[in-house]
Image (cartoon, rainbow, N blue to C red; front, side, top):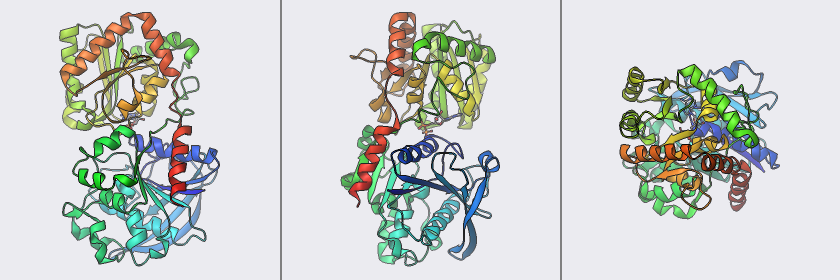
Length: 471
Ligand code: ADP
């Protein structure tokens, strides 16, 4: 089966979060399962672009409303990622260093989607399915079905995977002129709440919609940033498929970012060595349990609570633990986390920014990972943490609920709490400190977690069933 993934991110080419990890891994596993999986994404000016070899596979010319543009598609020559990778370049729009965050992001991703569909229309053979990811590519099902220029492609089945429904790419109706001429009777297929809403359009037009965990799919019907009624209406075509993790990239016994590898056989010693190195680097006391947070410093992740959590833990539990936080996002939270450095007594530090290597070192070195998310569609961090023997402290929501079992339950291994409040998080930290003190139980839960299977094979099979249902 030939699958064309269209995405704004793909690790290691360009990654801002979990979307990048998933699109960097799923096609590889699909390829290993005997499919032909391809990924097409914008040609950002990232390091990966300059350190690999490329060949030009297509040059095209099309328009976004009155803006006519050339685009080119290049392919990575050696299929280094385990699948065919294509990049689309559009001068002035996609040739940027960052993935997101520009004032013209809507125009950038509309132009990317038009170029992809235009390129697709030049193919001699059609792919069996076009698989789009999140709002940046969710207009493609509409473009295939309801634009006059491309309606000869309308029979291609499409799957939309929603990695995060908080972001929908909503834009004013004045932007409708950017799309290739479309059937005006189909206005409703673009619209939600008085605007063009790419994510809503994708949900309406795609043949199937998937979300990245079962619990998140349920939650979307009552908590999806305005799309609740749509999820309820379209529930017949929505399916939850839990993300896997790339066990080749995230492997504590062969991690290119670690100086000291370890496995389930020597987890205690291996983690202790990694902890010592990390604590030396950040001036932390390695004797204390180390709690880390890795992620975007945004409301969804409850990052705004972290500064108070540190203060409350020190006050109520005592200075028995250390904290190390890695992330970037809300400038106010960044400033507060930086400010806490002043109070550190070798028990607090933070790194504001994005650092892939440090994230691997933290998963390996930490005793506990904090994930108090208000919204968590799947969450990969907790799965990485568990693979590296780090006990996750998670809020009972979305994919966290589907992947972490509380230590007090039969065969449990993590710590689960109900609400994203400073009190609940601090209580979870207290429970974690208690667990840390019980060395046998702590060791057992580490070993249990490291043996859990979060590999992509099961989910790859579930995606295949979805594709087959579209034939
Ligand atoms: P989301 O996609 O909502 O950000 P996920 O848990 O699905 O959250 O995926 C987050 C991914 O991004 C993980 O691979 C995590 O390690 C990585 N990550 C997030 N923030 C940073 C950062 N500041 N530095 C390095 N890696 C990060």
